Length: 472
Image 1 (cartoon, rainbow, N blue to C red):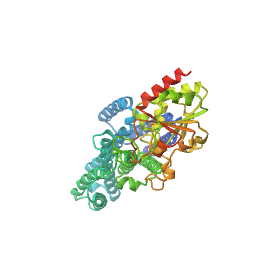
Image 2 (image 1 turned 180 degrees about the vertical axis):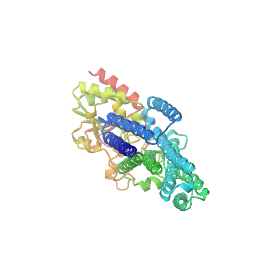
Image 3 (image 1 turned 90 degrees about the vertical axis):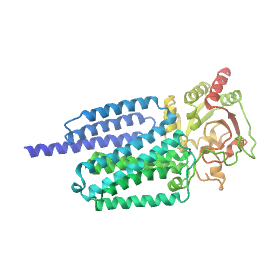
Image 4 (image 1 turned 30 degrees about the vertical axis):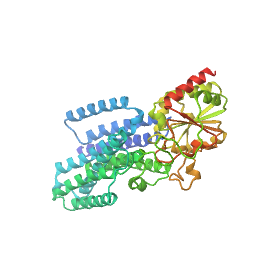
């Protein structure tokens, strides 16, 4: 009877793990749309709660004091961060989460090695301990470097020194060799500490030479690393849910990384080893005052824009990171509402890297109650520009640069961009003519159909709201 009961419990635990995994998969699937993202997040959270509860029962935990204390403290910190962190700082928060996830996996590997000891671990367990320690440590320090670059604690420019890429590759190869030797002969305790120290250093060396503008790609890749580290920790603990959930995170992170690289027409190797994307200089065709060369710039004002938009049939709003920095999402929604009251059709064109991460801009606009059906991704909106009267480009730069299609010598040539130049009129809301992360001038600024509205995005939009109301 005891054996039958044990077998039943084992089957029930596996079934509940499968249910929790299903919640994860459905939750990730629903995160792909702004309309279903909230419920997707809730489903994934339910799956995680179920997984934690089943794991605690499965491992026959007898004392829960530290577990409960950790859950309460972590829940409080998470609740405070969720309510206090601005949308523009979300990539930094994700970077910290990635780093903590990597650290947790490395600590699990460390704890299991200390608990069981080298003599009690088989080769398969030693391999996964080494990999969990390696990947988790890289994720921790790499994420901290990414957080520093995004927050300004560390310069956003690439930090390089001679033979840095060679050193990074050699160090990576050395850590893999050390992990193999550790699995072969775990009695050499020094190998464990070599893997830990070398991996922490590798995370720093990997991220320092990458420019601040490429940090979103790095964060996405580190998110994948954290998932892989968790999956390795699952093998260490023989926990199928941790193995599967870690693999899901790892795969999702790699897919997101690829989406971002394609959106910027860059390879991942170029991002990691190209020392590109500093974004702090005014290179390209702009001088120190932020004025472009060889272009005739036409300025406009809020009253003129109000007249042009008020008589338009269709207006497309293209938001960029400048809108997010200015926290102008609510004002842009007010502009759209006033135009709709005048009978103007309003759509939003979202480039995959318009914010600092894919989906960043969608969430920002959803926060301002912009209807989901007005949000068009790049493939959907590009066919709309030829029938659009006015495009309002707010804080975006490289993602609307026609050079990506017309200038083979441009560093962004081949990068998928929004075809705003096909519209009857484009109006760029921007502080100055300084280039974006690619460091080149935007050919759109001098185009015949383009006008510039200089100033802070939020104040400029507030002036437009005033002008629209006066023209009612």
